[in-house]
Image (cartoon, rainbow, N blue to C red; front, top):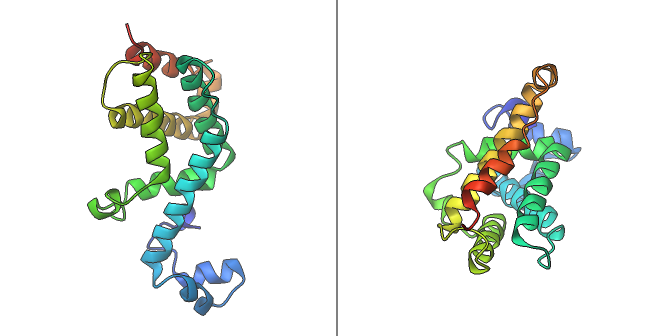
Length: 175
């Protein structure tokens, strides 16, 4: 609903009606609408982490793990467009405040640890793992959005966006 109507166009009463519960029920679990939105954000982060981490195999080379990470994150967003839309919208909203960014985030922690391991293994350059996470995750996010919004144009021009993952790998792999 938030993806369709935006944060401000989605009152708690609408959420409650869609869920088939009274608005008071929502307020039993969340203090206010902002608390609900932050709760959804935290849930979404857990879901992304769970999907990607459960499909990670640390017995593989980091290169193979990187491509699996890319594929799994892409697959998750494509399988769950409402989660992708919410997450993208949240990150680009005032809800993503400095205070919110300083809170623990299991998805970001997993992603950062993932790239830290690649550095420790000597398979990727010694760069800030947060920068590496941002580089990969924002590109996956953008590609999923482009595939959704320009599906016919991509097909018409026979464009394959997987090349982007190869370009990024070429830029981060250890020499």
